[in-house]
Length: 354
Ligand SMILES: Cc1ncc(COP(=O)(O)O)c(C=O)c1O
Image (cartoon, rainbow, N blue to C red; front, side, top):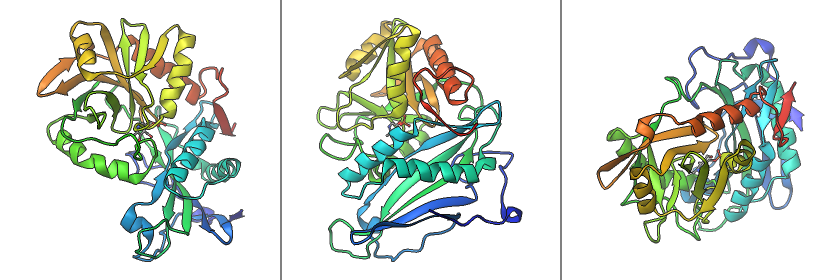
């Protein structure tokens, strides 16, 4: 892998006010694929624009996949990655679904480690902040005939992001979509591909206008079974001790945070279960007080407590719209492992710099 470092005088610094996904680190990784050569020209270079033909397949048919993970600054000044190999496995599963070439997982990690080591001053140290990492692959063959592209670019960019909870660890309000669906079994809902997100924007914008933070998606066939929330999976806590999450239906994204909770929670004394969850049963159980907490889980927020669910213009309040003890505990344990303040019994951390 070629490394073209930029001069230290040209290097940037973490801005004081961090938002999400607007500032990027100095360098990027990229390589290109063609069927004749396989992956070639692997290099780390200055963050820069990509030049493509307007006929490139990605612009017309959405053949692209991506990932999202974070690097965390430890108290000792080191940098941790959290389960990066799971992101690379999911990246390849998404790629296979979208008829795109896979990237060797060990090489993907090697490239990421080299990139983050080089840009390590971009990993912020403000509490709750991190370096967000975005690997992506796009179809680049300039051809309008509807067929899989033969050429691709895979790249990794990164940028510092502020704490998700600027005003404290407060519950969000979620609107259950009745009219629009995100994905269908047999489609690409379980792949991390741009089209899923484009399809969700219309409803997300509408609910944002109405003052909600996120959309809860139901399955597309029955309009009845709970799938996931925006860019998070969702969990329901029964009686303060059992955590239930929708089973992987084929149309939801198998979240790495979701999987981590399913592994971590039993070690903290909670029962966990993956089930087909009927929205009406859940709402009845919220009303009767059996569901004591609801939270979203994903890389962006780790844990995101849900205080209100609205369906058919009726609002269901969970735990008096307060963050509950299970959400707090899981957030503390999970982020403790990520930032290196708690033990890592599952070997989930890959140190970039120790
Ligand atoms: C649609 C969707 N569901 C769930 C998740 C949570 O996945 P993870 O925990 O791997 O970030 C994400 C975020 O990547 C997402 O985009």
